[in-house]
Amino acid sequence: MTQGQRGLLRSLNTQSRCKVWGRNAIWINGTIGADYRRLLGGYWAIHLCIAATCFSTFVHSVASGLLFDKNSSRVLSAVSLQTTETKMNMLRNNRREFLGTSLTAGVAAGIAQGGFFSASSHAKENKKLGVALVGLGGLSTNQIAPGLLNASLCKLTAVVTGTPEKEKKWSDKYGIERDHIYNYQSFDKIASDDSVDIVYIVLPNSMHAEFTIRAAKAGKHVLCEKPMASSAADCRDMIDACKAANRQLAIGYRCQFEPHHVKSMQIARSKELGSIKMIEAGFGFKIGDPKQWRLRKALAGGGALMDVGIYALQSCRYLLGLEAKMITAQETKTDATKFAEVDESITWLMQFPSGVLAYCSTSYNFNGLNRFQAFTDNGFIRMDPAFGYTGARLETSQGKIEFKEQDQFANEMDNFAKCILENQTSKVSGEEGLKDLLAIEAIYKSIETRATVEVES
Ligand code: NAD
Image (cartoon, rainbow, N blue to C red):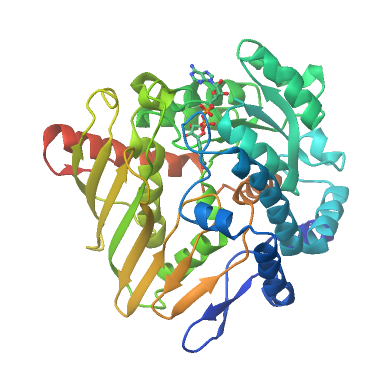
């Protein structure tokens, strides 16, 4: 490894430190991020600034859940749209502080030295890896494209859309030239587009497999939104296609790049509060428009469980670092018309090989469920709210643990770019996505058979 590459890795792997607000107010080491001690001076100033500019109401509202977008009938009012823009700027600043100038210097030095394993000629020309977004709906528009502006190792270079009106809008906003705009039919031509290293699939769930496989065949690395696909069989096909093309595959599990979640995992796995004995986790929201694709089985694959229950399921898996063995589940529908094709509300119980039980829930029919709590030998680890784009709160039996807000999408995309540059497998690989789908299929099977089901491995 060259000195430049070492510089890049050092800056990306910098250990973070955070303050534990509790009885003993001690310093502890985190697992990602930059030197927080350097940043604490600005910490209270930023909070005062938030109060002074009347953001507190907004911050409070986003703290209780996702920023809801129009297509999924999640609420994104004109006011919150404005504040989203401002909020993105804040996250951008936090991230700049977080990464510090050393990252930029490290990247520049690393790329200048050349020799990155799987990077295209694009990266070797001292440029960021290029990303093509496939599907320009709510998530791409409001989170991913702004997140890419915050990324250090990659940038938006192409888009794929089935809506011609979006072409000019995206071209004007992000400076994408016509040659780098595709539709779903012309998508395969992306193979000869040297500005694209990574294809990011942000389409309805049942379309993930087709576009992942086409992207791999076009010689591109693939980042695919969650859930990975609508069946475990499709997940396996996606993994095989990326392996055959010698391309990387990762799933958009953004929480795994959010500092409070990373800290929770570290506390859980290091057993510093003792072993986990039981976990409770849940995520849901009240879905609006009854005509949207999320309520059509052919496009969504399933309902609340596939869309948001997957966050609760995955939090249990990553806190324990284990896979569930046995699952028992029940479903209820209070609106049989709206939820005729997909699940409305589900609770499920998972038993892990260590003997830990996890009881989880999800719903498309009410707001407010957004948390996990792990009970340990000597205390607890709790995130509430847990799974939103912003506003995560972490508390353990020893006190609150606070990190500055960060752009989860920028972190996720930079991590994938880093994996490509280093030829490392992502911690949110296709195999991880498959494990979630195997558990989800066991949940649906348990509902159908009214029996406890063994999870396929
Ligand atoms: P959306 O409805 O806002 O956008 C979907 C996009 O797909 C639109 O641009 C639409 O035009 C396009 N599309 C192409 N073919 C379509 C078809 N046959 N029917 C409907 N739309 C079609 O959805 P979204 O919220 O952007 O979700 C897209 C993906 O991202 C989903 O897999 C979802 O689970 C995932 N997602 C992830 C997060 C996260 O936090 N990681 C959040 C929201 C959504």
